[in-house]
Length: 85
Image (cartoon, rainbow, N blue to C red; front, side, top):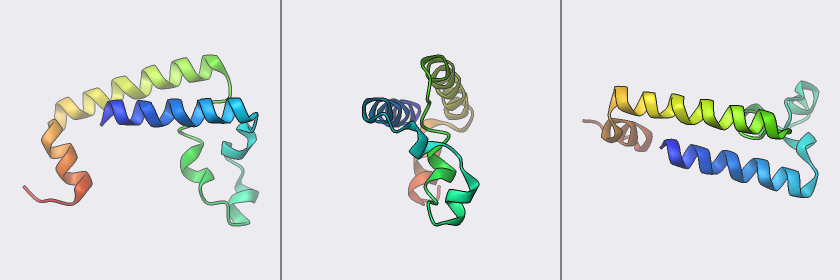
């Protein structure tokens, strides 16, 4: 789970930087009101600057690993897929 989250974050940030459209992933509540609901989730997964990217990905990876260790990798994957233990 932590590696997948890190991959998604890197992909979003890289794509936004290449396209020079980081403004599409920022949290803009007026845009959310106009129907751009993806901004509620993507502003956590896309970073505009390299320092934000490095700090955010390291922090996200470490928190996801701690969560997996607390819950157990199988429980995390089962709860994401809707299986009961």
